[in-house]
Length: 477
Image (cartoon, rainbow, N blue to C red; front, side, top):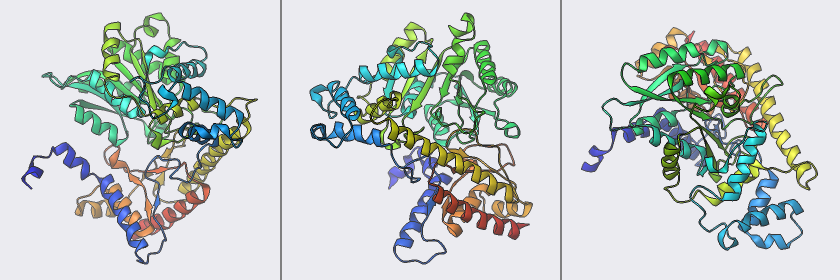
């Protein structure tokens, strides 16, 4: 068709990405196995995405019970549900027109749920006030982030708008920036020091970016995806001072804030640190922070619930931002309900609390054990090094390929880590993502693995990786 010639190169490049190639091949292999083709493995293990439930982690009982009662209120008349579940469902249904979650809501979200989220933020930040007026619920934090980019990026200017982004970072965000017409200004996280964010590197990137564009925003992913790092309070203070000096808008992606591993890790929100830095800075640095029900202990990716909180926006700009964030139809009501449950889970004394706390702790224990086991296996394998995993859902080990392997990839006109992942998939049935999809320093190579799975799935995956990698290194040494 002649129309195919007119397809945007951006769209075309997206569909020809390495991730798409891997995903399509994984689906093909699965279909081939189902049709009787014999392989050395019985199924494809998919550790390519951040989907908790796909990894075999069971949904939280309290969450699903409240959702069930909201979907089918007749359950409220039965004795099968705990009292606090019924009370929460009844409370949420009262906020819905006609007592039904099938009704439209306010375009920025149900008022009660926005109030609940603001209370959650205030508790999280040790009493720092949060107003429901500054909170906008959308169908996932990514949707909120995309809308904020529309507010910040001026695509009609002769000098393009620039956004500083970390390297590595997840590919869909980079694609969104390109779609908005933004100039991407990369700053590199320091892998050798646990993927730390260094202000000297931010300054280098900013000065380089100013030669070709107008930098207006600084994107932060903390805890990090795909790196699994978490910023210290000191690091956050340094970044905020830098943003204040350079008049940069901070986009703080904090969706992994409840995913901490180890006793020495603590999450500090950008908003809380900002509030404690003195009035000159705390009242002037503009920020938007994002959170979601897709991550954390809930892992409800498919419910599509997220929010953005605006901080220190000029009233005129905030009015425009409010209109922009409220122009589309209301976010999915089921996602809003999930946000309410995330922000206000069962408390000690509630009927559901014992089961809830046990399930959450079990998820944390499972992920904690997986991270320990992953690092143990990597330590045994030649040609792999990995920074300690402190937070989030992913591990991002570095692959030290022999020169022969790099030449092999170049002959096939592919990135070495992409070709590694493709052969890993073909020969072992393990589906992971290559570091080239996230950005990395020149001549460095990585893979990203999802760690939030059942322990038996992780053990199977690590055994497949170990067998393949050992043979790979032997072949190319």
